[in-house]
Length: 228
Ligand code: CA
Image (cartoon, rainbow, N blue to C red; front, side, top):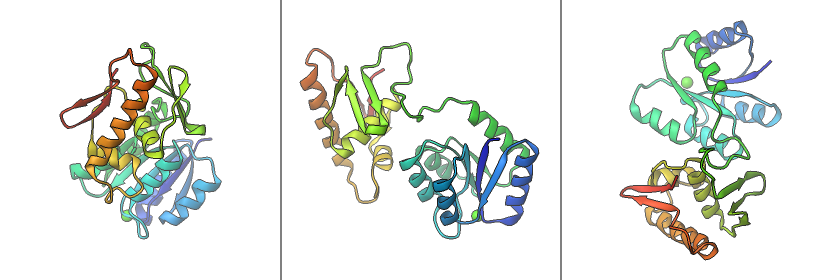
């Protein structure tokens, strides 16, 4: 039975969701705080996390960032506000889907099933999404190593994370801010321009291996993307 962790501090919502999950044949686990959620995630193999953004001890966004830094588990966020910004931030931080309160538990379980059917682009061992095109990159997350045409790249920590984000999302354009959000432990501290410096270094490292290729990372006005 698939274990689903529900992180939610409002008992009435929690009860409804737990009941719906049980009825649908899942094994629900519950946490009322971020700390409880951390403990469960550390000790239990969970298939999916339903995560409320408004928790008493930690922001759901911070918890999501924490989960994403260690795990590829699917996450659906719950937000009380229907503002675009919550949705966008949540998805950019790596949530698979979101639900705005109030929602019907039945709709939530339908979304959970949909997310579980979806092959996640973040799962370990994946490189480029585009299976048809030969991808020159190979992302070995267990060893924090990226190979380019079979050769391991000597990358600094942020270079590795940055290139990793681009490899997982070929063709997608990221703004500097989005990249900072994804690679930095303290996004407020980083400066936009440091991204440019990292990209420049990555380009040089790639070029030193293969001078015959066009630069793989493209700059499209507002952001960077990896050429498909
Ligand atoms: Ca709440």
